[in-house]
Length: 428
Ligand code: SF4
Image (cartoon, rainbow, N blue to C red; front, top):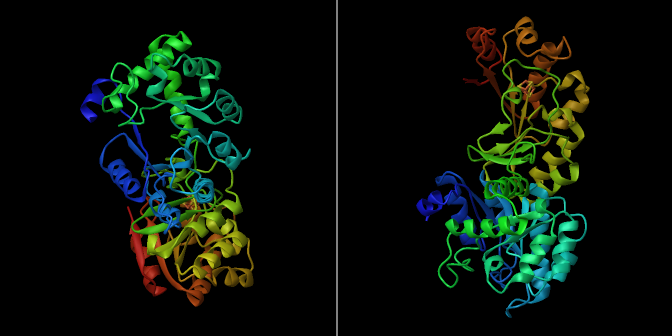
């Protein structure tokens, strides 16, 4: 399948989950095959009515690095079995998860297009894909007006389906996506056989005819649409929660009062496949919803960090850490330890209360080194850092870290850590 796809020029894949099991398989595939991304969701026909809480289990999969969408989810009133009421409840849970994690929503609808739009409402905060659309024209036009993407699959190529092609012609080109919905709905000339990713070219060709454009121009537009719909780019998404070394990290701010010479923010948009750079400060409500979607079985510790310094948002940090602790997490703070530059000792002690452990970036052995390498706004930040370490030791277990840098004497840093009787981890 991958070989035939490559021969057809298909090199990127979105593999949607439709159940807990298939979502896990899709996530695994995304981590083992280049160019594969996954989504996690429970299709409206796949719920176990006796176990309706399984969207909660999806959150665990959503933390994985190449899982970039929530779905398939939606409503299916064509098949009997699961009540519309339960489907709507589950659909709403998926929408909330997508919004909390900031991931694209992939929507299935069959005989329920109006109901789907009603449940989605006007203000979903993430991109929405109306996947494999074959519904009424007015629904597609309203969905496109709302900014949703309309996905066309094999039916677009069916000989008698002029109505669907007319619909595609009437939609703004920047709202159109193509897909296979494999193994179903093979396009012409393979209709009736098992579908596969390489056949997406037939749908692209049909779009080219509809747009009356050169195929390479069509491909450029469709690729751009896919990237935007799936937020595949550092400017399109910021991951506020991610999994690393078996722990869950929460990226709560992009602000920092230092300008360390080695700061990763200046060199990369994120870590691994996560986009961590902030384009605006994350909303408190979104961070709160993320915490509500997490459970301690998903990671050993919940670590509050930032693509910046988390104590720059002290009230929010305290609130989130408390809430995580109440949910049973071991809670850690990763900090540069300079918050006494903007908080009083009392405020700092209160901020640290919910934490079980605190990791402090020492990064220097004296004020001169610190000011030269970490370049803090406050010239006395080093003194505040040492005061913080003492204060933190009264609240939780503390460990120090230091990044190797040419302007820092590591032997002196080690000596200082020893004098402070604190463990030190040196990073490369
Ligand atoms: S303290 Fe951390 S976030 Fe701030 S500049 Fe230094 S490395 Fe970057």
